Length: 291
Ligand SMILES: Nc1nc2c(ncn2[C@@H]2O[C@H](COP(=O)(O)OP(=O)(O)OP(=O)(O)O)[C@@H](O)[C@H]2O)c(=O)[nH]1
Ligand SMILES: [Mg+2]
Image (cartoon, rainbow, N blue to C red; front, side, top):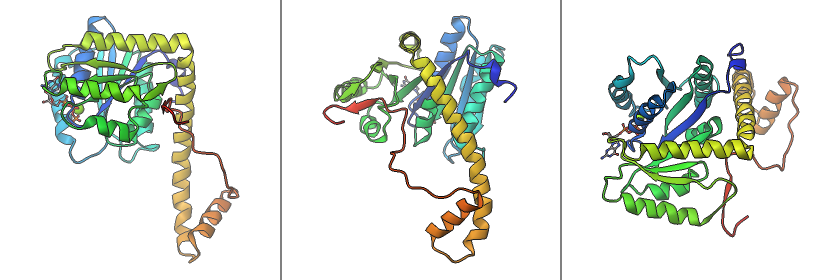
């Protein structure tokens, strides 16, 4: 990865996230088709957060993506994240960098939106697409989970579903409650199975990337992704060292605060108290009226 790093930074990177079954893989497949029709090469990283439910999904993806199997300009990788140094985002960041270094013009990362993982993915990519499912109460989940803040493009997929328009209106009114600085997320309706809306989705991606370039946010995003990856790598190393050290402290029979100080002391670090709030670089929208 060290040797390859200098070869990276050319690919357009897209995160594709959303709840289970919303149609991410079908959308990804349709996007691959679109990107190939433009003569560009494309890599797909499909992240399986090691959930017991997702094995069927991976198998389904294999079948769905057979259309592209003989295309040498398409590279597809499903990966489980469990046990990887640096966790989900570490493994994914490496895969994205690799595909970038291979010379893929576009790299798409599919993750199931079930927690913190998709928020971390948003820090890795240029454009984050959040797909939502009509008739599922998703709009409420979105607001709760902080997904609204990471979406550059909302996709209401399954526009053939009777509740699709209602979901669109719900997202619209939610967005009206927010003050956006800079880019205002686009809202696009698709039917991934038929390809309906995919051209518009791709146009939305291109508009967002153009915005990032013109506003200078692309460089900022690159710096953030870099910092994020360095932090993840360093934390991964620290965690392993810490775990080893913990073993010897647990037996000591002291309180956890003293034990934590001793563990840190073993690394030559004295504990400190900070008033600084944890930083959350992905948050760029705030609720109107609140600061
Ligand atoms: N009616 C309709 N069905 C769709 C559409 N897009 C996807 N589906 C179907 O929805 C189901 C789930 O699609 P997937 O693409 O596997 O969804 P996913 O989000 O990747 O699912 P997980 O990876 O399991 O989270 C499949 O049966 C698709 O054929 C759509 O636009 N309309
Ligand atoms: Mg899938």
